[in-house]
Image 1 (cartoon, rainbow, N blue to C red):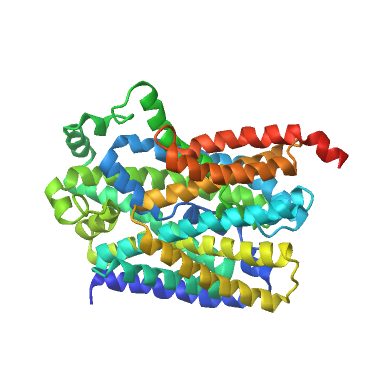
Image 2 (spheres, rainbow, N blue to C red):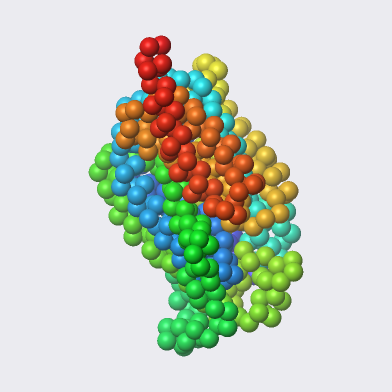
Length: 483
């Protein structure tokens, strides 16, 4: 049997075993959705990092660096800044506020924070469901790419396999299974993104040789931090990369990690893990693309269907692994890329499930099923969401980065300003939040379709939504008080 396949099968068996083992801890919906708020801060931080950096980090970012060049450093730097800001300014106050309101989800928190407003609950749940379907679909698409590039399996079959595994261990084990598997996946991801470029540089003769080869690249835009742009175009290019950082303030699947922290001391533990992890992971992803650029000729990459007509640059990482390290190790590291997809998709499945069961069915519709019935419903919704995301993945023709960018921008631009203002502005009211939910989501869709060439929606809608929420809150403050 192929050694790469052996390494991958071992990985899958371990993940499913963790799911089965974790199922014993799920006696109610709080256990299934937040692990009973009793999971160690170190574990939750690994989970937050693995969930935050889906297949776009392991597949999409190295591919972008291969295609664009060092200008992709803006994406890495923006993301690292966003992670630091989120942990420093959002984690602790959000944990304490959601605990005070007894909220299990972000929609529940926002609804409770603004007077048990059911409109806020409904809109925030619908926004969550809409964008996360796309996000999960991107993960399933990445799984298909990985299976095709690694094992020669048909992409659609690979998507089915990836969705089946994620859906199964999420449905069985819930939040605890997701967190424990995420820890393994976070370690695999950072290992893949540090070992592979290091081996590539070593094999070509060291850092000096690598830098010399890099300097000989004929395309001047590849070595330009602004991709050869000048003036406004250079600013726009920089903002496109840096704006990825804004999204970290508004991703429900990451914010739930803060909500699940047992104590403020656990948040301090989480910061240590998160801040240590981001440098090797993000800079390693960029370096992997650059090393591949000077290691493999254009002809080799075209023949491998990485570049050229019908090529898929998302397949760079598995191709690099299979050509640079022993096959058994390649299997383990390639599992890190599939782990990236799984670690995000499993968390997002939980978020959508909670939006349907806890927010819409239980809180909005006022249904009061028993804990066992609610748990069974949550697991059934997990299966339904997997099917919907698969259907979208089969139809989507763009790469992983494009799908993630759309969902990331929509969630970050909608929830980011609302979360920050809910924690730090006493003047923010329910009318402002409702306006923000509508403007953030609809604005993202319209901007993406019509105006993305000007400034990415990840930046424009995020900034504008702050203004919308604050202005509407001020204009309606007196009216709300009199009511």
